[in-house]
Length: 117
Image (cartoon, rainbow, N blue to C red; front, side, top):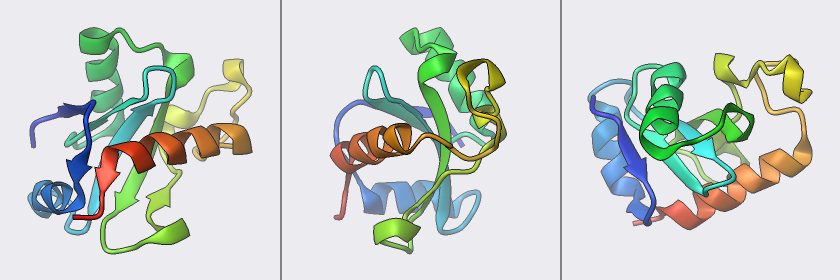
């Protein structure tokens, strides 16, 4: 699957089409909370993070790996789980996103970029 940078709203149905090629109803994404963009379509969060760093100038401190469960809504839609989230130097010591403020930032960015169509 080709990695795509999302800067403008994308339809959930378009993400579903992308997801079918790899993971079924799940798509991996990396959100840059500083630039309010995200990358989707990679097999690994690390590939998406590298793509954002190289193509968009993203900084590791602001990039977070998530899974979008496209068949879910509400709290089940975003899964905060990725190896790239292990950032002890930035205070995150798990695969999740430990800081509730950062979780909220991620939810806001995803909410702006993913439409329910």
